[in-house]
Image 1: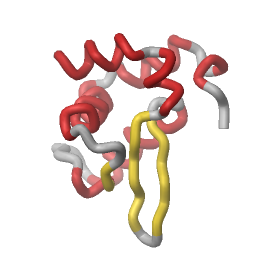
Image 2: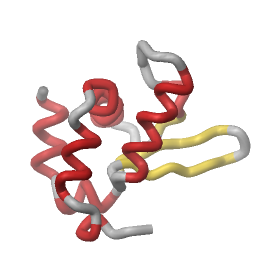
Image 3: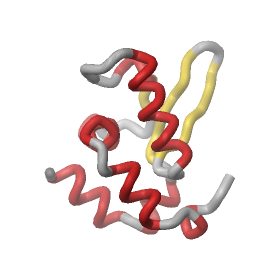
Image 4: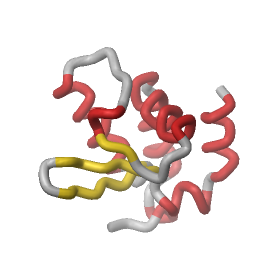
Length: 94
């Protein structure tokens, strides 16, 4: 897994530039949980489209995924929290 310093900032910003992906991060921040399952998100696109958005966030090292059986748990990357706390604060307050 890459460390956040190795992920170009433009890739992070591009991943966050989509309203659905931004909503995913906001929902994680608003719920105040460390991680949630994919089924707990509120989204208005087809499941395959939502999965594609999640994949982009994982590839940009914004989200971490943990698989337990058939469930996938998502959380905000610790590196993002450490290196970009103000970005997360801005997203939460938007």
